[in-house]
Figure (cartoon, rainbow, N blue to C red):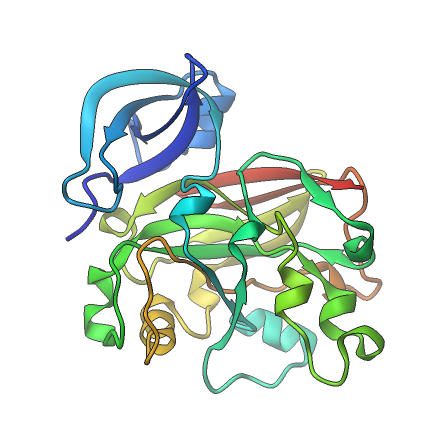
Length: 293
């Protein structure tokens, strides 16, 4: 059963308490980050122990939103799964061999970060820091061995994530060794900010075609559409659930399009103080400042 909400946010209210709620949206193209910028974002508080359950209640209690967090807390996310090399444009740009199946890796839950918080970058990861805008699936029902025809029953919705990556530790043989190393290079604390909302698959469907974009200090670096995905949402969920339980609350980053820093003729890696905005139409934008520590 689909969640009781069509959009989910987690936020600080005008009373300084943290809530989860259904934002009050007048039309699909308006996103919560835009309303927050206009100081006009309000939400109906959701009650219940499980926001994915049919027993959760979208109440009539409306509260003003003063700050957007990640739509799920770290405790609500059992694991962060990710797909690499999954946009045809990125594969061509980098001269990669097209994967025959989805390439799967994970981030630990400590990579969880809020939609607008500063990201602390430890010295080990400051060299060759890269951005990746990603459509991110949110699993709303625990399942295993899910056939493609039933995938829609397990999707709560979609959010936006930035799969921050240290390319030196991912690809440089003098650091990563002879085989590309994904989990360490992408799994530092706070290396997976996401938000600003989860938008239900009731609104976006099982194969959403959405524009997505990355800006660094307001300069466009990535611009594409999810129609360029090599493996789309149903194929991803069906593949990674083979013999593997996908718990509700799992988020799945589906890959990034061309335009990453390492693919430039002269790589344009992130520096201290850079502000990275990643945005997907009808879902919204997150914005995070890189802070070298």
